[in-house]
Length: 53
Image (cartoon, rainbow, N blue to C red; front, side, top):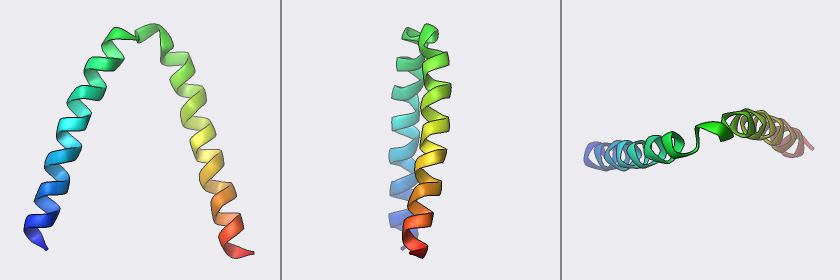
């Protein structure tokens, strides 16, 4: 289990680095990202609502 968790953390770090590089290329899309994150929150809410149904 601990090795598995370490592996997941490692993958997340790698992905984060790639994501940061990607963000630096697209700094102008930060507004779009904000919209996207809010829609993600909305999706989570709706998903939780669906779960309770």
